[in-house]
Amino acid sequence: MRIQSNTFKQGATFAYAGFILNLPDGNWQPSATLRTPDGTFIQDLAISLTPPSAALLLPPGLNTATFDSQLLNSPLWTQSTNTWIVILYASYIETALWPLGPNLYDIRLNLNGNVIISPTQTVNVIAAETLS
Picture (cartoon, helix red, strand yellow):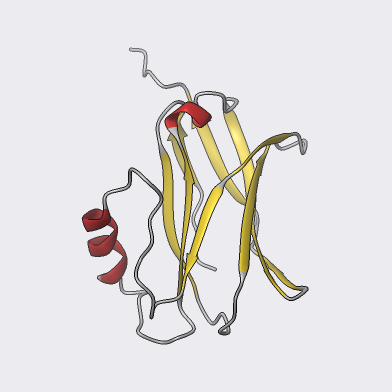
């Protein structure tokens, strides 16, 4: 899985798109839970896992044209049936409650009891307004 850590402003819509390479075909069930570094639950993130042969399904409120150009023109994109698109999402209402500082999540993929877990990713949440 190729996912990078990022800095994010509290109270903004959180949307992240990435790729999962070399994932076999199947009806994978994705999940992702955001937690503090000490393991305290923050929320389950909305997650979409789409094989490249299917239409790109985006959560409500996301700009399809933006994701199409960023994803499909990326050098990571291949037409191989084993490269999948993953999208994580949380609304601005949800992220307004996220604690400041580093928060962690893993992407978990389950296919009939076969589980793949991504490396832990960091979302560094900063205050919504930058003070000068």
